[in-house]
Image (cartoon, rainbow, N blue to C red):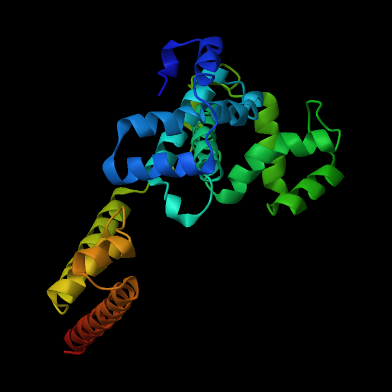
Length: 293
């Protein structure tokens, strides 16, 4: 893959022309070679043939004040993630799958770069951030300044967000970011960042959450002892690993059908649930008896 950070945009675009478009059969062949054998040559051809696709997507995000080289670089990160996760057996083309990874990578970069102050945490807020300019253009409200009440209502309804969030986001996008060190007050006696609310959890919350996490981990470990070795292994591989193993892989490992692996997984999960609920009920009963005494 092209190391874009050190290359000009024109050089990068020339580089994309070295890779031809892939036929469905060739694409599948390359994807299988990378998935099964980690064939670096196959990966280079698969990814290289989609570099022009990254540029096309990145061009759609040029209105946020960030350079095209940076946008394309972030898109390339998403492309590589897509190549690593792509399963050619599912029947759709790599470009269709990669598009979501490329967009997600670019959007996360934009949200991170736009401001040091967190401005979009929910899916609805991110949707508002990336669609507000387009909707304003459609409604012929691209000039700076507050939106008309009717436009605010239309945008809020279309994107399913509160009207006050539309107003706030529009003002942020129109005004741009200010330095956190900008002085405020009549005599500039303080800096803006001194007035920002610290939304980090307090120490008591951190300790409580850590205790709860530890309790749940212990509960899970105790409940897992009620499963046999095969059930524990299949449940761990399918539901507890960060990158779950497929039914196909486990069926080969145990020389049984995928449906049989699925049945064992479901049965093991149900046994685990029952054991954990029973333990929670037992602990609650013990605490109640102690309080009563």
